[in-house]
Length: 316
Image 1 (spheres, rainbow, N blue to C red):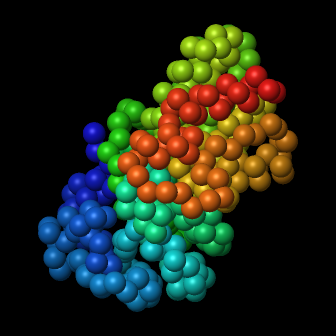
Image 2: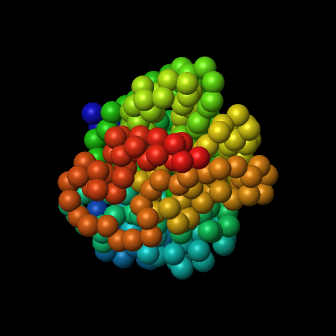
Image 3: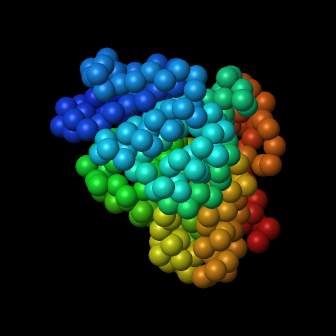
């Protein structure tokens, strides 16, 4: 098993051979973010800025104006903390810089809340022009990176990556289309449908939870939808699922304030009012601990997700 951050360490140096305009900026965390792997292969295209994220963002803005495709990286919690600089130096002038935020969610474990990217989606999505990618697996991350490198971008993009090694539950042949979600489990029930919306590295737990749910209530078909792109969101897929589902659930390793649950709530409120349950980190700062223990404590393990879904169905 590999993490989504491993994908950028493995693949960016490879695709960097083809695209010589790729430059990487690091804020003293290249080993942790895996961006240092690019520097080993292309030392003349890798720049160590030090613990100076604001300066790094300003440098990236300038380089992008001269035609360079700039990847800059740090922990998601540190990048989102430079909100004002990102807003003024990247989002406002619409610079096509790729921000790589790693160590997201509860899954980073014992490093604790100061290192956990728990509010980064809510912060980044508030910025006009900012696009957001949150891949679920190693192979999906490679597709995201390929898209970012091969496409002529016209705006800043935020790429959200995790540290914890995870099962690659998506086939490498799975089609990637920016801005589109994908049904990754259609379910086997024959009557009522419920939909589980997921994003990022928690997808494997969501799929395991879906199997537990179908085993517990045979008359329900459980659909699982994965969103690798959070902004722009695939409104059509959300609405089509809402029209066939009895209840909708959102599961994310992120605060329930401003994340995927909020995004989908906004879409449904505007276009298709539906029953929606958000499962994520409540409006709190969590403890530190082993990832599996934290998922269990805060209701994000496969078993706890299944229990919550079954409870909501029973009370519906």
